[in-house]
Length: 241
Image 1 (cartoon, rainbow, N blue to C red):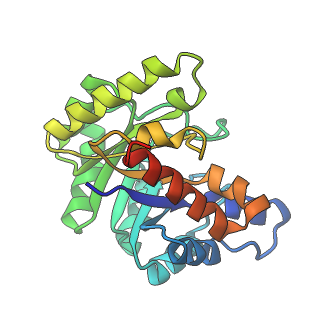
Image 2 (cartoon, rainbow, N blue to C red):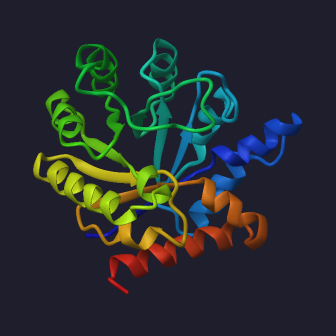
Image 3 (cartoon, rainbow, N blue to C red):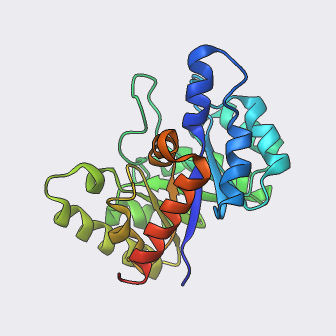
């Protein structure tokens, strides 16, 4: 099964917001990413609007040719915007204003009722829903029970852990469990060209969401070069090379 690369352009917007300018433009980054081989574009519209802005979300809906994935908290504000913009996918993520980036996976098992209130109107509007979760079997089962189409497994522990082999095995097990439950399986967080191959080699994983490493590499390689480098690293992993 082929492996899709969805490029997250949040941190192009981070650079823009740092100076309050109109550049660099995450929309232009998205266009370059797709020309370089990305299968889709991901953005996270955070409640504090620290990088991606509502205008970005709306303009990207008009220009993205591949899959358009909007990450957001399970909030009324996020739901309002998602229903207005109609991305292909919405990925519900945990969000705390004091964090630098998303830390850990969404608590699904203990919040099914509240999540269902957001999931139902999204699906009724024809938007596929993904839940960003740890590779924990209870969270996967709770996600399947909610009837979502996809889970995205949090790879942060694998990317950062000294005991990487243990974290990798948890991801392999979680991906297989999710696939068996009828869920489409994505993965992401902290992946870069040095560590992506082992995740790309997991057969049940069909999509990777990667952003920060590509933006960081683009400082030295150019954005298109950074996307191509990630694509090649993923393909090597999928082929077992």
